[in-house]
Amino acid sequence: MSDESKSLDQLLDTNAATAPAGDAPKAESTDAPKKKKKGKKGKKFVQHGVAHIQATYNNTIVSIADQNGNVIGWGSAGAQGFRGPKKGTPYAAGLVVRNLLEKIRDVGLKQVDVRVKGIGSGREAAIRALVGAGLTVTSIKDITPIPHNGVRQPKVRRV
Image (cartoon, rainbow, N blue to C red; front, side, top):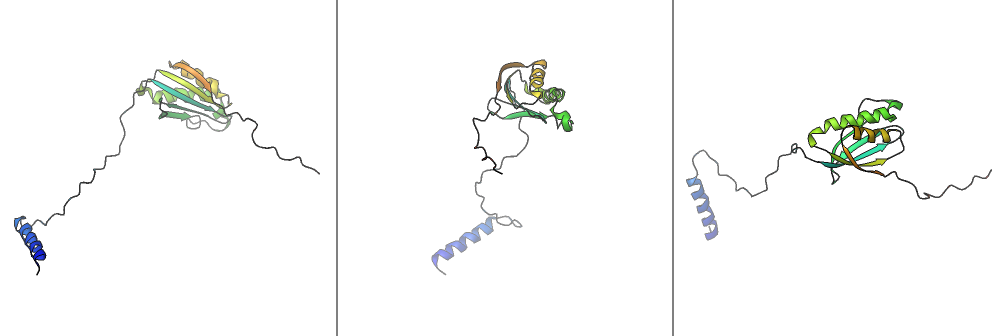
């Protein structure tokens, strides 16, 4: 045997001699970063938020986010149990807002900026429900997408 192999054998023998009987030699641990536990984050506390209202002919969807755009809570007429043409009514939009504010009442929301998209009948009712729930509406902005001439029209059909 060479000097290198002897020194390796001697090292193994000394490790085996110092280890308690019955315990196998342990492998060296690498200092790998520990994984963080995934779970529920703590409740956020937001005083000023943004309420996004999407009112179509068929449904009304309301979501409330913080100033960074992280959604705190959302609700829709379909999720409330309305079906068919009843989802697009102003009554359904008002109930959506009331139930959504009940879900997120622990957040401490006081003021909202409102952004309305769509042409459905629930847009005004949703804003009225926000005001009626005691929130201060600081601004209302209509962000309905409007086409600026759009795509080219199809050519005229000749018979």
